[in-house]
Amino acid sequence: MDHRAKNVLAVVQSILRLTRAPDIRAYREAAEGRVAALARAHTLLAHDNWIGAGLRAILACPPSGLMRQAGMVEERRVSGSS
Image (cartoon, rainbow, N blue to C red; front, side):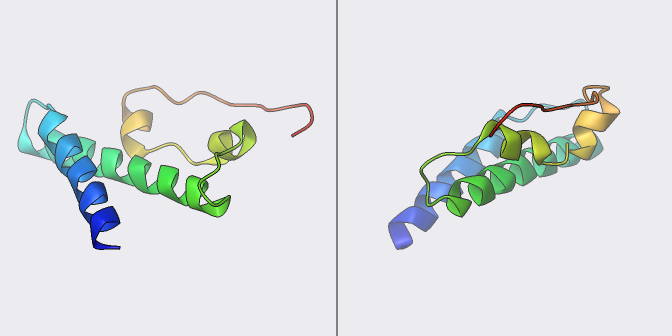
């Protein structure tokens, strides 16, 4: 368990180091959005015992506030069998 926790913290540390922003407020929002995305990915993968995540489940995740601010959010529709 300690090894897994250290791996996750190393990923978070990398996310924080690679985040760039023009000011502290933008940095905070970007870092929070990236960590939230990591948490959503973890939840999706853990749901199916780390085998993978279906596209429908990925698309059902709500977009981050940062994505909304950047105008990156568009309406998504999924059809077909799962």
